Image (tube, rainbow, N blue to C red; front, side, top):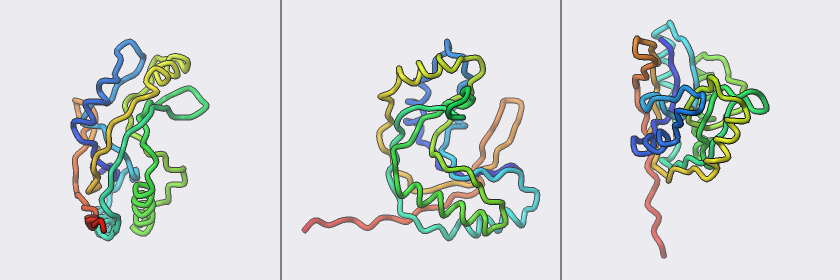
Length: 186
């Protein structure tokens, strides 16, 4: 099975991402069912025991619930011809802490470390025919793009399956984040 760990994007936020889709741009746009914020891509896992060990490790994450804001657009790979078009995330230390814990626990569960720097993003499309100039123009046109903050109170271990309708992501296990204590004003 092909696994990854991600944060689900609320449906109302996905609708705002879909509104960016422009049929005139040479991009294969992501369907709402595949929009998420990846914390860690695992890949193929053939050993059910290794998956169970991963679930056990991820259950120990200690991060408070937090708010996340999608902001800005960009593409990968940077400085080269664009392949992936994405919506970015407003800087968030709690998200980075969560991602670091998830990465460490994946390594403890026996997976190879991911040495690439973490760039939080939601893939909105794959560039198929658009030139770099067209993609940059699209990004500039939407430079003020922003999705208001939404609460993140869990992360999910997903299985990714390819079927006749494309890629399908199925949640295998949900992991709740801890509640933040209510702040009382003096």
